[in-house]
Image (cartoon, one colour):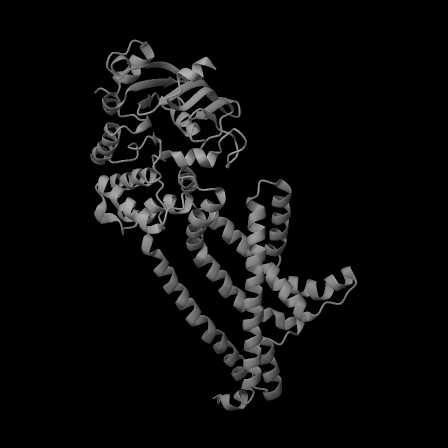
Length: 220
Length: 257
C-alpha cells in the first residue's frame, strides 16, 4: 500500500508557485499577442485583397496542421540555424505559443463575424451609419458574444498547452514538477500536485466562463 | 434639363437605372420619380426586379448604370458628399428603409434600436432621442415594449419597431421592401395600419408589396414591373382594379381570390 507523502513534495512549494506563475504569464502573454495576431489575420482573411487572403491562410494552415510540440522544437532548434542567430528559449516559447493560438483565434473571430446576418449591416447602413460605425456598434458586439464560448475554450486549451514549453527548458509548472520529482523521487506526489494546480486555476475559470455566457444571453 | 426643371418637387429621381449581376440583367433602364407626399406602389412577379429597384434608391445595391438624384442632386459612389454629388451616407440619413426580415439589432432593446440612428448618426442628445423614440413607439402602439429585446416580440411588433427606427431619422422618404411578406397572416393588418396612417400624414413612400388590395388602397400611383422594366404605370384604378395589359391582368387576378 502506497503511502502518500505530500509534505516531502510540498517543501518545494516555492518551485511550484514559480512554475505556476510562469505558466500564467506565458498563457496571458500568448493570449494577448495571439488576439493581436488573430485580429490582423482575421482582417486579412476578410479583406478583398487576394494577396492578404492567401498569406493569412498560409500562416493559419501551417500552424493549425502541425503539432504545437513540433512548432516549439522547430522554432528553438531549427529556426536559429536558418537565420543564423540564437533565439532565447523564452522568446521561442512566447513566439510559438502566440503564433499557434493566433491562428486559431483568427478562425474564431472570422466565424463570429461571418455568422452575423448581412441584414444587420444593411439595417445599420440604412440609418446612415458608416461602415466603421456599423462594424463597431452593430456587427462586432454581436459577433463578440457569439465567438466568446469558442474563444474561452481555446484559451483554456492554451493554458494547458503551455505545459509543452517545458521541453525547451522554460521553467513552467510542468518543468518544475519534473524538477521536484528529481529532488524527491516522489513522482506520484509531484505530478499530482501539478495536475491539481492546473485544475485549481482552470476550474473557476471555466465556471466563470459559463456564467458569463449565460449572462450575455439575456437578449436572445 | 428642362424635364428635370419640371420635376423640381421630385424627392428621388432615377433615370436610366440599370443593374446587372454578372450576365443577369435585373433592371433594364428604369425611370422613376417620387414626388413629395406621393405613395408609389411597386408590384410585379418574383424576380421582376422590384426589390432591386427599391434597394437601388438608397444605394443598398450599387446601380450598374443610370443616375439617381436626391432633391435634384446626383448621388455619388462615396459615403461622404464629394463636389456637387451627395454621398451615400447623406442619402441614407434622409431616406429610411424597412426590410422584409425586420433586421432589428438583437443586442439592443426596442428603445435603443430606435435611438441608435439619431444618437450615432445625427448626434442627437440622448435624452431628446429617447423622448422622440418613446413618442414614435407610442405612434406604432408599442410604448410599453421599450425595454424589451427584439427576440421577445412578435413579427408584427418587430416590424412596427423597424418602422419607428426608420422614422426616428425623420426621413423625407420611406422605402418599404415587402414589409409584410415574412409575417403570419394575422399580423399583417397591424403593420399595414401603421403604414396607412403614415400615408395619410403625407409621408413620401415607395412600397414593394404583394398585398394588392393594400397597394390599391394606399398608393397614388402603381408601377407594374416585369422582367426588369416598368411594364405599366398609372393610378391604382388603372393598374390594379382595371388592368388593360394582359400580363398585368393575369398577375393581378392571382391576388383577387
